Length: 483
Image 1 (cartoon, rainbow, N blue to C red):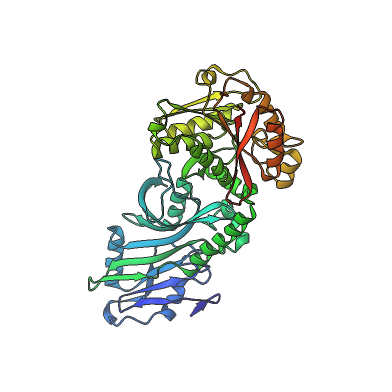
Image 2 (cartoon, rainbow, N blue to C red):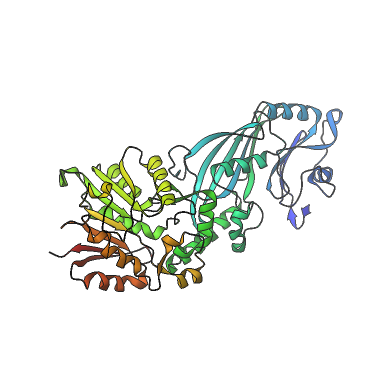
């Protein structure tokens, strides 16, 4: 039998129970139009236990809504109905869902991403029901529209399934900051990429048979449509990635603001609309800084000093401090400066959660002012000064529709060079710079040559290196004081 052209498959059937696949679009029961419950008599063979048989087979609700595909358990006899309902009450029926959600799953306490093949269990209270769920990350996939999608196994643990367990799973995911693809306006950008229905499916039911007590397992594995969805998004992202378009992805920006965090360099940074959303291309700046700094304690007897100009969310500074201290065990102090109090508040939050035991100072300071705040001057000069300045013109921002992010972090002026010019007469014309200081700047590829000329024409600065990003475009310039 089919429903709307989709087969209703029976995967297991005996005299007492049956397990079927409910297609999306078909309700289980309790609605006026055609439901799976009404179709059961024509789908299933009658029970051979004639004197114990129910008048008609019954669905033991697992809460699948109309939009969700998945396994459904039905009973044919009184003893099956009694024992299966008792098993639900005692949490003795195991159900597992496959799902695709937005973003990466993050440890609630450490704020670090959870890798593929890792599991964690979370308990929250929703609608006065304590819901405990085990999540296993199967795949983490780059995505054109929303940066990352994650494929999960979801196993809810409930003493008794509430009327809408599928709904509760969605709320649990929302509370963790990961929304089911196809279930929210926040994942709407993916609809244009071919997403149909909600990306969740009940794929495994495991129970003791209500009459024989033999273990009965029905497991259909990962649905093909989830696999195709993941493969399609990875292909779209790869094409976009090689085209160098990820910096202008405003769907990704809006998703990051809505969920309140963004992955960068393997760490999870809190973000809001007072800061720019970290881009993968900026990881080139972090990698360059780490390579320029000494990598072992034997390389230096003193504490290394890093200054991050226009720190924003703190993603650059925190990433450098994290790598240098955790991976290279180097003593290092970092100072982040920004003109925005709101941005500094976010940077404080990220530093406190991601590098709580590290020396990280955050100060309000204008990059165009050569007069330094005392917290900056006391540590000067710095081994390395990092900056990803605003370099878009107003016309470019309007053209690319980048208006969701703070203008002060995006717009430089009419040429795109104004922030670099301000640095030369400001922070780079101060005691923050010493004879051995390296300055590492992020640049848009179109301005790389102009920024080089701007720095070198004064005679003080010399370009010592130019790094390319993952798109093989010029992204990072390294300058040192001429000797």
